[in-house]
Length: 380
Image 1 (tube, one colour):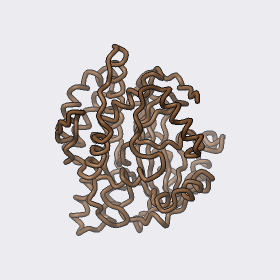
Image 2: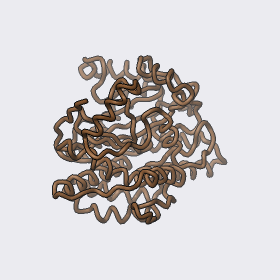
Image 3: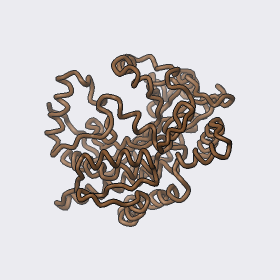
Image 4: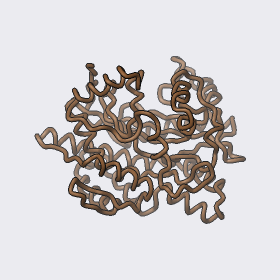
């Protein structure tokens, strides 16, 4: 099966941010995306001329809206794009009396009572996956980075897999599920991987091997479209990008900028290595799988496996070393400020840590957590 990989400018960016609609009185999720889009259409008829806003999209659940940027050269450009579309979203939410929130999961809303968007592909997913499909009350941030040649796609994917726990720990923001503290930093990480073709990616020696895999998936009826491969990191052939899908939803543009900068710098660094004739180290799949679990469970306190020899280190310590290594790359890409913000997440606490602090200060009242998440979002 031939899969054409679109030509992209190396290390350009695209960002996707899933946002929940919330009733401010109860803190519960509000299944009112259709009303939001009606308001957006009324206020911006030119943008909605094709029936859908180019940068504000619907999602599987009616309580969710996704912001999608255009192609940016710098993280700052991508954040400005998100900020502008967030303003449009707020203008639509205001008359409906809705608030906005982003985290890996909602702290207490029941997943089984959420209205699903009326589209055939969503109905098919829920029908096929049954209980697991009806549990997908999760939100994420995705970062696309452009690759200038298809030959880089699989090696860059392999390289990013090595840093899976770093991204998971920094973005983890889903400790609560259906009103209960799960004991995990990221409940979303382990929930999402229950879907067919989701979770950790397979690693292939080259693009041809990936094409063979996709052909097998079509032949055996596992997928009907390439985007149904829902790996935590995946190539997106029609865009010419590698897509980092690991991260939980995040409340602030500053956090998103830091994650985007770290992704962009790593991909650029891998690309340079390949251009210079070098290779990118890989780890055994069992180490990668263990790292995912450790980061989902322990977040910033995870002791992660660094290499095939089994060397280990605290994820935050290794992340700080990584930031130093990537400083020259960030300077070239114009994202030094945003990359430095990764250290702010480490010192100030990831989303799951902040949520637990608020819950503890309010005797476990998760409505206070929702109020804090809404306030963080409002600060953007």
